Length: 384
Image (tube, helix red, strand yellow):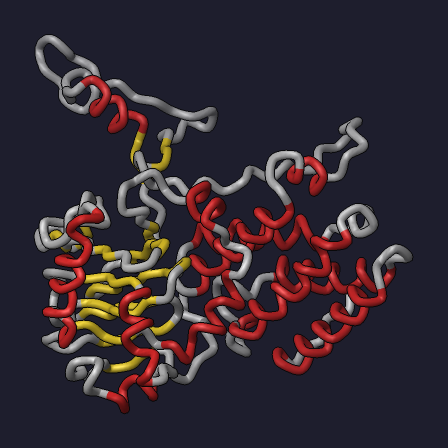
């Protein structure tokens, strides 16, 4: 999938700084007033990569990418809240994971050289998970010893990052997070066959993939079409909300959106729209793209829902503006995203709002402004 973040500064070679107190130019370049440096340093978080490869690797934090130098070991002064880490090593699929940063939080995921992947933990011997409060001062001093190896978080991008993650609360972060300890999201979905799952369950391959005298036949699971049965590898599934389908002859009077909002609040749903967008746009995740498209369709098919959930749609239009703003201008020509589905769904959203007798003046105005913005940005009509 082509990277489609709209940014002229998407990839940067990071030149390692001197100690943050002495390097005022670097602080100013990163949008930090030198007088506030100590406060930001003490309140911000850290992510340290104790043993990352030094070549053929790109590191991203939020939507800014870095090509690290030999001395690079991570990032410091990370603002509290949600952040997104991406790692691209050689030609392997992009690895990504979200972190939730508290005051002085330190994460230290360990790289597995043999597997060319992270260990399944946000912590390592370098920084154990159970650092007690009594040792925090000592731990902070350890981090200062590594200061010259840590890049300052790129603060000029922070407001834009907040604009595309404003609804991803800690509750949304925890609900959607894959069950593996790292919270790892792979660019490519990781599946295993039902036979492989059965081998793990039984602790043996005999009678499943291994044939011998005692087990002369192999166990095979097939679906109705005779194809192998696959499922997500344990810990790999993102816990997206299951969206109901429109079924012919269905008697329920509730709309699809109403049924979804019985499971999650509308702010949580908007957080999920943003979560799917981030892992698709930045992490190159196909499952993120798929869920983002499904959620867009759910919200665009809104003719009966606008009077019931006015706040949802007013907030969604603002959210959607910031998403469209970051997408590259050739988005609708891209091999993976330029499909007829999106070319139909987005105009449908604008048309349903425009035609609604119940949409507020604010919603109609924002929708029209966004439609005009889209037509200018993508140089195409969004009439339905």
